[in-house]
Structures are given as C-alpha cells and as structure tokens.
Image 1 (cartoon, helix red, strand yellow):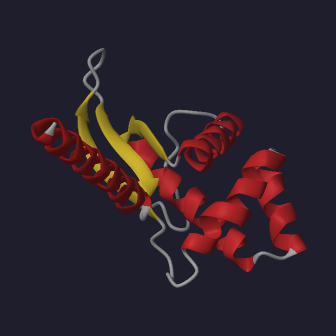
Image 2 (cartoon, rainbow, N blue to C red; image 1 turned 180 degrees about the horizontal axis):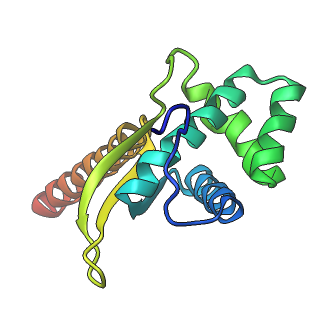
Length: 147
C-alpha cells in the first residue's frame, strides 16, 4: 500500500529528483512557460505553486525558504517582485498544464507548464501590437492615396 507516499518517483534517486524539480522551477520562473513531459509537469505544479505561495507571503523567512529550494538570488527576486504580486487575489492554482503532443524521439507525452495569467498577458500584448500595426498601415495607405 502507498499510504502517505506522495509524489512521483520518475525512476530517479531522491537527490536527482530534487535537482530536477529545482531546475524546472528555475526555468519556469525565468521563462514563465516551459515544455516538459506530462509526469514531470504534473509534479512540477506542486513545487511551483509552493514557491508562488511563499512569494505572496513576502517576508524574510519566506524568501529564505524559497532561496533554500531554488538556490538563485535572481530567481527569488523575480518570484517575489514580479510573479507573486500578479496572484495577490488568487488562492491557489497558479500554474496551468496544457497537453502539447508527443516527443519525436521516444513518443513521450509532452505538456506545457505556464503561470495561469501568462497567456492572458502575452495575448493582450500581441493583439495590441497587431492593432497598432494595422492602424499604422491604414494611416500610411490613406496618406499614400491622398498624395
């Protein structure tokens, strides 16, 4: 029976697992969107959500706990100053796992892990740029037609 045995082992030693999830969390904090296998993505949610929760606390003890896991001052600073404040009103569910397809080499299932507000933020920026570009083209075509 697996009572009280949480988490996936992923065919790794405990030290290897710890290093793997540290690196995945660092990549997620840095890029805000990463592509990995399904099993790793589902397990990564636990660690990433904990880090965001620490970031929302914002005190020195929380910073130290986050640093003890991530081992990167830049990542902790970004987490506490940029990422965590975006989730101030949200209670949990800071990450999203989206099925992506299959890897070419071994046909492993792939997923994209991103912060829940990531696509909203990037989509808004893209549409604003597109809208500005279209408006610019209209202006140039109008001035070209009248000249």
